[in-house]
Length: 251
Image (cartoon, rainbow, N blue to C red):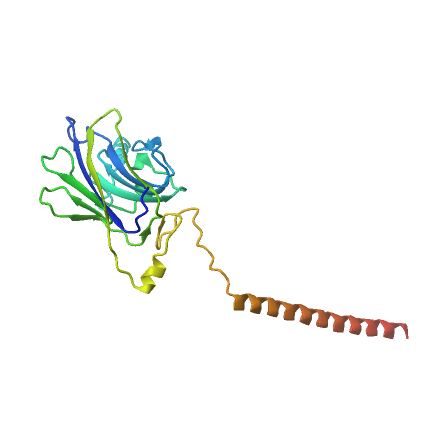
């Protein structure tokens, strides 16, 4: 497990095969999760995971279904594959394989990573890619406010179906980073116990209630007692007046 507070990981990989365009699949995933790797339907690993998944997807499942149904996306919504996307999960989300993870995607980019003759590298901190052979990082996914617990496991997995590719993970290099923080940032970036994304509410995640201060608790109890005493006094006055009215009826 990784207990570093600030880190980045470089993933050196190669995807290659004999399949032509859209006749290859399916891709691979890079994981930072609470549990060790278990076989499952999400690029070869289990669904409903706790942590971060970064997916290098080489086959457009959703696009093929749209074509079969004679439907098309507008140009603004269409994605070009291979496609890299990221997902943060607190265990409540399911990866939608048929839609290539679109409903739970934090961000993504197109990356032509198949059958290249030079190195292809992916950097996890924000997700940067170097796939042009120029040793220059290019932005792919930059989502602020992603906070992940320490003590999770790194891993990679891959899957092929009727179509296939070779997915080679050449190296995984983890680096510790030194990040200077102001006192306000230290308070904001406190350790978390479940994966969270600021300003994004994941299903099943309720915002924790802040503990009540001693003064606030005292004031609540005090005014509650005052209200109870006031209600009792009003009740006694009303009861006495009712009794007086009752006596007058007998005379």
